[in-house]
Amino acid sequence: MPQMNHWLAQADRPLIIGHRGASAHAPENTLAAFMLALEQGADGVELDVTRCATGELVVIHDDRVDRTTNGRGWVHKLSLAELRGLDAGRGERIPTLDEVIVATAAAPRPCLLNIEIKSVAISSDGLERQVVEVVRRHACEDRVLFSSFNPLTVRRLAQLAPDIPRAILYYHAMPIYLRRVWTASLIPHEFRHPDVGLITPAYVTKLKAQGKRVNTWTVNRRDDVIRVAESGVHGIIGDSPRLIREALGI
Ligand code: G3P
Ligand code: MG
Image 1 (cartoon, helix red, strand yellow):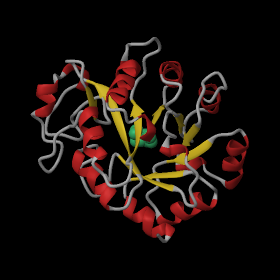
Image 2: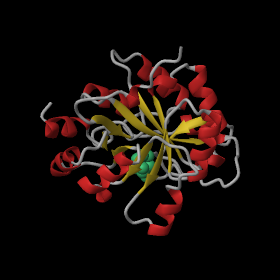
Image 3: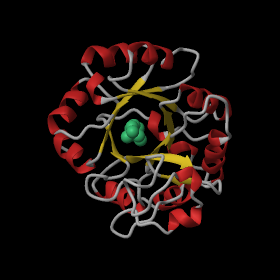
Image 4: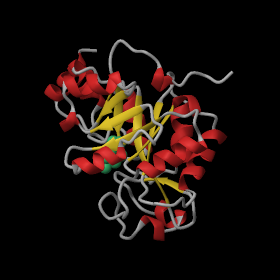
């Protein structure tokens, strides 16, 4: 019998999720940042996944390596070996998705993984299938939540892995017509991931009435943590799990 997904469990407080790990205190999207998030009391981490020139799944936010490493160039044009040679901050390396799954599997409590898939592909380029294969190979379906700004990615994930929950990402600066299209009922999903600027008690109540859970990002101010918690969100994604925990008084 399949295990219940930990993201779907009822909790008496919001989940605390480290955005790109504890990226306020360690280089973003590195193993150091993910481990630090857990040390700071996070329930899990958010990470950004894309594919490099040699086909491996790597964990990095931008299309290019320039901002977060000592290198230059497009991720999709660099081999894994080339990416490995870069310093992602304080001697950290760009990890693969495999490495993050393995490293977080050793945590004493199940480390929730919000795997955000960076894709603008309209027709499938196999990225979603590849991500699902990695998750299945590690048998970590019960701690994974997929998310994407690309509604077509979310739809493909629903077809490929209906058992793994999905979230649609959007933010307040997005034109309203895009937000409406992107949250269409044609895209099966359990979670909404609006940015912190969209959160009001009324909005969260409305989404809950539609049967959705709400995780919000990127929450880096104590007053915002309290505000979104009081609005009834399911999870809070921020750069400092410690700040979130302290603001929640736990
Ligand atoms: O998944 C929440 C957040 O990470 C989405 O925006 O640009 O930080 O990946 P971004
Ligand atoms: Mg992200």
